[in-house]
Amino acid sequence: MDAKTTPGKAGSNTGTVTLTDNKTGRSWELPLMTGSLGPSVIDVRRLYSDTGFFTFDPGYTSTGSCQSAITYIDGDKGELFYRGYPIEELAEKSDFMEVCYLLLNGELPNADQMRQFVWDITHHTMVHEQLSAFFRGFRRDAHPMAVMCGVVGALSAFYHDSTDIHDPRQRTIASYRMIAKMPTIAAMAYKYSVGQPFIYPKNSLSYAENFLHMMFAVPCEEYKVNPVLARAMDRIFILHADHEQNASTSTVRIAGSSGANPFACIAAGIASLWGPAHGGANEAVLKMLTEIGTKERIPEFLKRVKEKDGHTRLMGFGHRVYKNYDPRAAVLRKSCHEVLDTLGVRDEPLLDLAMELERIALEDRYFVDRKLYPNVDFYSGIILRAMGFPVSMFTVLFAIARTVGWVAQWNEMIEDPMQKIGRPRQLYTGHARRHYVPVAQRG
Ligand code: ACO
Image 1 (tube, rainbow, N blue to C red):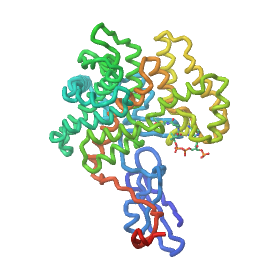
Image 2 (image 1 turned 45 degrees about the vertical axis):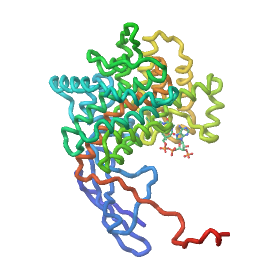
Image 3 (image 1 turned 60 degrees about the horizontal axis):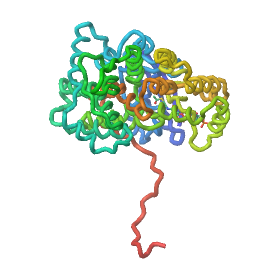
Image 4 (image 1 turned 120 degrees about the horizontal axis):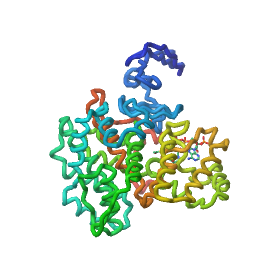
C-alpha cells in the first residue's frame, strides 16, 4: 500500500492523500483536514466504505478522535495552550476560577462575568446530605480514588431526571455542580479515612482556600489558610485542568458519546485517571523515591529501569505527547522551592533525591535517546506531601483539577455536529468459523 500527499491551503478541508493498493493497483483519494495549529490529519471516515480497509492504531498514537478547540499541545516544543493561552502565563497571572471559565467558554471573562461565575460555583459546593451516607458504606482504609469513583458516580442518582444533556442550560448547571462539588467530595473522602467529621464548604473562601479548609480544618479550632499554600494549590489546579485527548478525557468522551448521564461519565474519567501510567503517577513517584532512599542508590535503580527489569519504570518521566520538557513540570519545579521555603522545610531529602535523579537521567543516553523528560508528576508529589496531603490523595487532587477539562470536553462533544457514538474497530486474530463439539466428544 502506498500513500502520496497533495498539499492544499490551510483551512478545514485541504488537499488529499492518494492511497494505492499495490496488489490490485486501485487508488483512492483521502481528504486532508488542517486545523489552526499542529499536523494535518487524513480523514479516514469513509475509508472502510470506500476501500474495505480499517486502520490499525492500538493506543491511538496516530489517531485524532475528534476536533477540539480547547487545548493544544506541541510535544516537540514542550508547549501547552488552554484556548490559545500558554500554560506558563496562566499559571503566573491567572487563577483557577478564571481558567475554568476560559476552558468552559472559550474566552477570558470580563469582571462581571467573573463575579457571576465565582458566585455560581461557590453556591453549588454543598452536596445533598443524603450523599454523606454513602461514605459510611466504605471501609475507612479504602483508597480515596475508589471512594471518588463510587460517590461521584452516585451523584448521577441525584441528578438524573433533571439533566437533559441536549439542553445547554441544564448542561451548564451539571458542569457547575461537578466543578463545585468535587472538592467537597474529595475532602469528605479524606475526612472519612482519618475518622474526622466532615467540614462544610465556606462561601467566603476562594476555591483553593475552601478546599484546604475542608481538608485540614477541625470543628474545635480556628483554621487559617496559608495564602502561599492556597496559591500553590490553585496553581496545581491550573496546571492539571486540561490536557486534550488523554486517557481519562477520552474515557469521558467515549462514555458520554452514548448519551450517558454526565456525572456517571465523570466517574468513568476518575477510574481511568487512577492508573499509575496516568494520574496515579505522582503517587508512584513518591513511592519510587522512598524506595530508592539515597542518592547513592540512584545508579542501581536506573540500571534496573534500563534493563527493563519487571515493570520498573522511572516514574514521573516520559509522556505520550511531550518529547521535550513538560512545561507544567518546569512551573512546578519552581513552585516546589517556594512551598518548601514557606513551610520552613530547609532539607527535604526527597526533593534533593528527585533533583539528583533528574540530573543523572537527563544525561543518560537511555533517556535522552527515547526523549524521556520529567512530566508534571515528577515534582507535584513532593509539593503535595509538604502541604500535608497523604500520598493516597494525590490522584484525587488531580481529579478535582481535571474535572473542568472533562466537563469542557464533554460539552464540546455534545455540541459537535460530527459527534458519533465512540466505537473503534479491531483486527480480529481469533479462530475462523468452527462448529460446536459436545463435551463427550472433546479430547
Ligand atoms: N522509564 C523508563 N523507560 C521508559 C519510560 C520510563 N518512565 N517511559 C517510556 N520508557 C521507554 C519504554 O520502555 C520504551 O522503550 P523501548 O523503545 O526500548 O521499548 C520507550 O521509552 C517508549 O515508551 P512507550 O511506553 O512506548 O511510550 P508511551 O508513549 O506509550 O508511554 C508513558 C508514555 C505511559 C507516560 C510512559 O512514559 C510511562 O510509563 N511513564 C512513567 C509513568 C508516568 O510518569 N506517567 C505520567 C504521565 S503524565 C500524566 O498522566 C499527567
